[in-house]
Structure formats: C-alpha cells, structure tokens
Image (cartoon, rainbow, N blue to C red; front, top):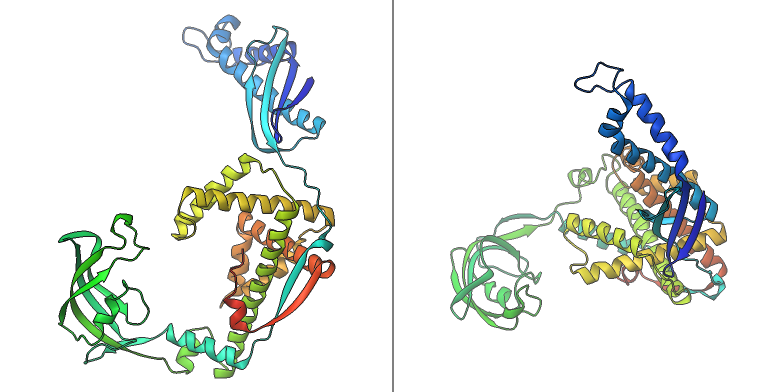
Length: 428
C-alpha cells in the first residue's frame, strides 16, 4: 500500500492510497467462485452455473463490495500510519484513470486545528461572592406564590393586576392586518404584554364594555412594514378577574414535593434550589469570562465540517424550543462560537491533563438531580442516552478548567447580592 498526503487548505487534507489491483482481483474471483456453487440462475441446476454467467450477473456487485471493503480497511490503516484524525466522514473518490495494475482512491477531509494553549496565568477573572439571605428566600417564595395565583370574577371595573379577557380586531388605514384579531385573549394589566397604550385604556373597563383603542404599532412588531403606524382596535371585554395569592400551607408545600416539615422544610428546599442555581450561574459566568479571554488569546481556524454539524444541531434545538437565534446568520454565529470554544477548551484540557472521570460525572448528575421529586429517575434519564451523558462529561471538564484558572489565574473577588448575580450577564 502506498500512501501520500496533500494539504489543500489549512485544515483540509487529501489522502491518496494505492493498492495492487491483483489482490482485489483475487478476492473478486474467490467470491465469484463461491457464488457459483450457491447462485440460483434460471436455466441452470444449483451449483452448476458457469463462472462466466455468474460473473456477468454478479460481477459488478461483487467488485463494488470488494472495493468498498478494501477502501474501508486501507483508509483506516493509512490514517493511523499518517497520524491523521478526520473531522467528520472522509469524502472518497475512486481514480478511474489509475493504471490497470493499481487501484487508487483519494479521501478528502478536514482535521482539527492545532492550538498552542497560552499560560492560563494570563487570564483575569472576577469571582462573585454571594450569600443567600433570608430576605432572598422570602422574595423567591413570593415569586412562587405569584406563579400559582388563583383567579375569580372581580365584579367591578378592571384595575392594575387584574386579568381581563378580551376580543379585539385591529385595522390600519381601515384594513385588518395579520395578528390584529383575537378572541378570548387573556392579559394581566401591568405586565406590558400588549401594544403600548392598549393596556392603559383597558383600566376602568368592566365586563361587556366596548371601546375603540388607538395605538402605535411598536418597532418590535413582526410585520416590518406596519411598524410605527397608527392602528385602531375595536375591543370588547369578556371578563375581569382578580387574583388571590395561595396561602403558605401544607397544600401549597405538597405542590413542591414537601409532604412533611411544613414551612421550615419548604424554606430549606427553596434555599437548596437557590444554592444550586447560584452555583451554576457563577460557574457559567466565570466560564463565559474565561472563554472571552481564551478566544482573544487563541485565534483558531475552525473546521467547516464541525460548524455545519453544529448549525444543524442548533436549528433542531431552536425548532424544539421555539426560541433562541432566529436567523441563519445568528445560528451560524452561535455554531461557530460553540465549536471554537469547544476546540480551545478541549486543547486546554489535554494540555492540563483535565478529564471527567466516571465518578465525577456521577457526582454531578446526582447533584443536578437532587432538586427533583424523584432523583433516581433523573439519574436514570441521564444514563439512558450517550448524548445526555456526554453533555455532563463536558460540563464537568469545563468546571475543572474554571477551577484551575481560579487557582492559577489572576482572580479578584467581588461581593454581590443574590439578585444582582442572577440578573447579571447570562451565562453561556
């Protein structure tokens, strides 16, 4: 076997392999000879089919099979010999112009870039120092109560905080436009979920009241050509409801999986959940700051193969969640950022000898699962999929890298409140 390698771009390689055709011809003949004794061909008794007939009927298929097997086997040997690790599946092309004595093919693929990791001592991190106070717990409990509001007819005109249910139909220049008609739509007054100016006119309206509301279509409206235009809405109020906060009692606690211990146990669980969210937010924030500096320290040419794979993954995630980046450019930018970060972090972990052991992964999964009512089911879910398990392995390795930088980099501690930390720059 003769092997040669050509660099067609910074990351693309073309590997050419030559094999003696005699060896392939021998395998083809052996397989055809075996088929001769097994093939069923009309007009011939089983086992009595002439070799020429077998060759005419099955020769092309057998040749394709033998060549495919030869490519698969020799390609891996050639890659090992040249110490190459393709990114994605190589694109194989058979050279039809090769001499009769040779079987030649080429495999084109991208390889991972080499990243020369700079000293982590250059990285500067600001480490948030946050203490969860009893007042923080009180505020979160009030938020949880508001998420479980109950509603009842108010029997009066609408006030701020009430939920009104309305029918409306909107027009611009006398014509109904897309998204301007709704029936039975609920809206909580004060949450700014409607077009600016619309909510204000609903205040003081009662059930069965009607009104014409003039409002300017905001710049965030989906139809660009209507932004900034004046719209007229015919509105009818179907109902006005007022809210009631749930009491902090056993019924409320049970809805969060607390079946004994009352308020004290509930507050303990709330604190535990807050501590987990806080830890993940701090780690994510530190990781993001670390990545920003690693990007600046390590210009990397990224394999387009990996970017395309990540684009497809991001598109799938966006479709599933109905959120995230909306345009192709935004998706491509996010994919490139993630792939680049993954390459740098992988190279950094390799240099520092950081790896996620099975024990570490298990501990992380159990840590993430502890806030659920049935932690065992969550643990089993993570272990049910290699993709889910790989995501935790990556998470653990990245956390170790953050810890390493915190130990060896330039770190400044910054006291913050819980609210300040949770409202700070999103992580990741």
